[in-house]
Length: 409
Image (tube, rainbow, N blue to C red; front, side, top):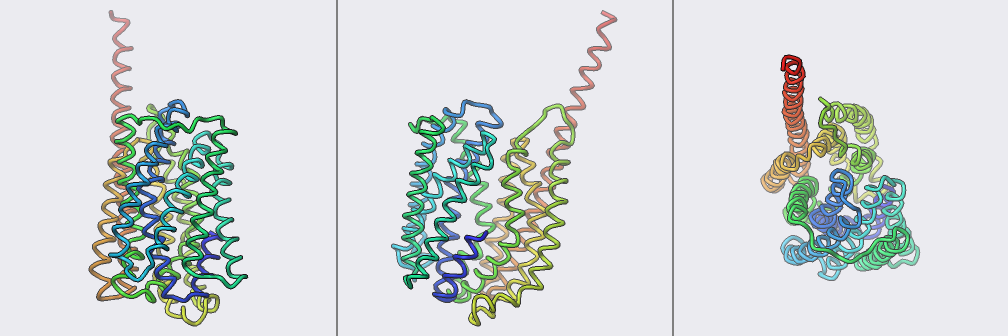
C-alpha cells in the first residue's frame, strides 16, 4: 500500500496527469496479463499442495513449466495490444514494465505461494514485500537525483524484478532444497490452470478495464486524474484485499461431512470486511478534498472522482470472501461464471458510458460490475452449499438405514 502511494505521488507530481495516465494504463494491462500467467499458476500450486496434498516438489516442477509458457504467451499478447491501447506510449517503456511484471513479479509470486502453501505465511509476505520496498526506495532515489521519467521508472522496475526473481529461485534451491527442473504438467493441471487463468483474467478485466480503456476513450490527462482517484480509493480498500489474500489457505480447507461450513466462514469474514468498508468509505469521502493538496492543483478534478468511487470500498468487503468460499468446494466453474459476468458488465458499460459521461461513466461501470460480483458470489456460494448439505443429509440417512436394518439380518 505504501509502495503504491509513493510511486503515485512521485510520478503524478513530477510528470503530471498525462504521463501518470499512460503509466496507470500500462500497469493495468501488464497486471491483467500477470493475472493470466503467474497468478493462475500460483493458485494452482497452492491447490496442489494444500487441497490435493501432492508432493510439493512435484507440484512446483509442473508449475515452473506452466509459468514459463504462460508468461511467454502473455508477453506476446501485450506486445500486440500496446500500440492499439497506448499509441502515445514508448514501446520500450511497455516492454520493460511487462518483463518486470511477468518475469520478476511472476517468479516472486510463485515462490511466495509455495511458502504460503507450506503454512509459512510470514515468510511469503516478506518475499513479496522486499520487491515492493526495493522499487519504492529506488524511485525515491530517482527523485532525489532529479532523474524521474517513465523510462527511468520502467528500467528500475525491470532490473529490480529480475534481481528479485533470481534471489527467490536461489532461496528455493538452497534454503528449501528444491529442484528447479521443470516437469511436464498433468492434463488436470493444465485444465485447472486454464480455469484459474480464465477466472483471474475476468477478475482483472473487471477491476482494471476502466483504467486501460480510459486513455483511449477519453485522453491521457483525464485517465491520470481518474487513476489517482482510483489509487486513493484502492489504498483504503487494501486491508480488505490483504485479508482476502491472507485467508486464502483457510478457505481451501474442506470437510466433506460438515454442513454450512463455507457459508458460515464466508459470512464471518464478510461481517469484518463490511464493517471496515463502511468506516473506510466514509473517511475517503470526507478526505477527498485533501488529494489536490497532496498531489497539486492539477489534480483538483480527482476530488469528485474519489467521492463517487468511495462506494467501492464497501462493495469489496461484501463480495471477496463469498468468492473465496467457492474455493473450498473446488467450484472453479462457479467462480468463472461469477467473475465473467462482472467483467462483461464492466467492459460493456465502460465502452458504452465513457464516451458520453467521461470519467463518471468509468466509475459507474466499475461500481455496477462490483455489485454484480457481490450478488453473483453469494448466490453461487449459497446454491453450492445447499447442494453439498443435501448430499450429506442423504448420506447420513442412508447410513442410518443400514445400521437400523443390520440387527434384523
